[in-house]
Amino acid sequence: MQQINITDLEKIILTKNHDEILMDVRTPAEHAEGHIPGFENFPLETLKKNLNNFRNKKIIVACKSGARAKKAAEILKDIADVQCYAGSFEEWKSENKEIIKLKTGRFTLPIDRQLFLLIGIVLIVSFFTPYGPWITLFVGSGLTFAALTGICFLHMALSKMPWNTK
Image 1 (cartoon, helix red, strand yellow):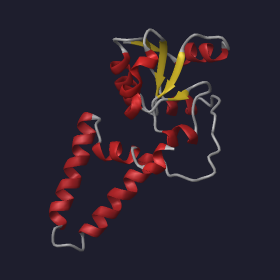
Image 2 (image 1 turned 30 degrees about the vertical axis):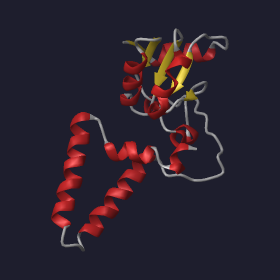
Image 3 (image 1 turned 180 degrees about the vertical axis):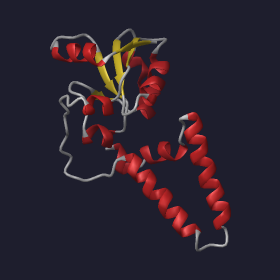
């Protein structure tokens, strides 16, 4: 899988007539909160349903940290010429590059904060139930699995919630 650095990505963005599809694979809520100029939102969760739209295209994928972009590149590598932005949205933002924010008229917590809030509430509630140790074990196992593999099932579930898909 080819990677593209921040300097080359910026050159492509400044070229108004570029051929590449600039693909942000984060959730719609994350994309609306802020994205790299020119990047369109194609959530990773819906990518497999729309593969025919990307056949034989040049695509550059990006996300918040780079993990979802790598997954998207793996999905697309057999049907398109894919480059993965070697950095991340967070790196782009830290370099004080331009960010586009969409006005949606509503406030949605970023998915990471929704995740923290949900886990916190579950752990607090578990303290008051007789199943508390089992709930804590289950939540801790899920967090450990997510840390070791980069796959968080709770994150996937939250990204499909209605307030995160519009």
